[in-house]
Image (tube, rainbow, N blue to C red; front, side, top):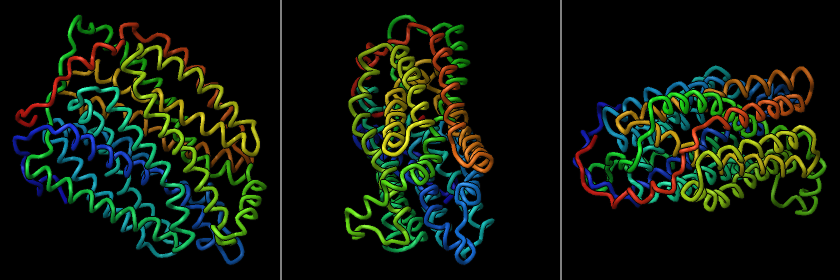
Amino acid sequence: MSAQSLPASPAPVANESLVLGYSSIGHALMHYMAGFFPYIAVGMAASWGEPGQPLDHQVVLLPLWQLAAFLIGIAALPAGWLSDHWSAPGMIVVMFFGMGAAAIACALVPDRGFLMLELAMAGLGMFAAIYHAVGIAWVMRNASRPGHAMGINGVFGSAGLAACGAGTGLLINFFSWRAAFLVPGIICLIAGLGLLYHWRTGRVGDRPMPAVPGKQPSRGDLVRVFVILTVTMFAGGVIWQAIQYGAPGLFEQRMAAEVDWLQTMTNGQLAAEAKKMAFWVGLLGSAIYAVSGVTQYFLGGLSDRYSLKRVYVLAAFLQVLAMLGLAWLPGYGVFLAAMASVIISAASGPAENLLIGRYTPTRYHGLGFGAKFIVAFGAGPVAIWLIAHIKALTGSLELLFLGLAATGVLVWLVALMLPSGGDSRQEPEVAASPRPVPAE
């Protein structure tokens, strides 16, 4: 479905709960479908390899997601521009239908159809790019308590990541890797139909960002924040994507004994022996994001109570310690380090988004958030390239995470240069109850 075939945006009532609800569902589905391929690849390794010789999924299959990861970043900017000039809820409708159709196309690719799968997943990445350029700003504009709303929205994003490991593992275990694409694709289409109905009937809309009282940021501060966040978001994006795409391989390598123990303790009832690694690696990945989702509900409010700079800088410092743990810790230690890294990212996300919202004029929110996610998700291909090449050269990912620890030190030092005026404690007071306004 194209943007042209959708209805012109009516004069809406910006219903805060429905906006938050659909945006949060979109956030969950976007992260689920942007994060499920590393787990699907574990399950595809045997069926796409030669008889008795499964593929090295991190070296052969994971790079097939590289184009999709690139599009998740680069397509965010035109998605944001369309949102500014057309409609935020309309763009989320396009996202739901596009991701659903692309995922179903992935499920229909024949075995060893490497190019066809890469192209189908590229379509998935292109439509997934819409969410962060549009959905985050949509929530912020319509929230009476922005930090709280961002925390809830972030919980759903983490829930999507949590579900993608276990959900994918279960679908592969009981059905096949094709079902792991097909089922979430159908769910996306259903969500798109629901939002299309509520948008056409005027129950979901949009409104301008409430003005922040007091002294407005200077032009110098705007430029300063833009430059600093460009550096920190790219480096932080590489770290985030390295966890998302690298964690399944880390668990497979360093937790083989733990997986065998878990399989024995359940008497093999939960996972088929031939598919046990895909199942347990998926379950461990889900546990990481499930815990981070719960903590994000509480951590999201930090951005309403404390200086945005303080929250952001502390998170950057703690991320360095998590990277060192990923480089060196064995067994359950690497699992806990991965969980810590994701929790730290969850804590800093709302502060980062509020900094962008504070220093970007409302009429350019789509472009502002589109630019952010070009930087953040544009790091995805870099992370995938590093994982594939370092694994092929060294047989492990220790050097990758040592390098990311050094990168984390750079992020922390640069974040210290943010303006000190980024205190968001006044901001929730100015966002009055949503009111009907003409669509932007």
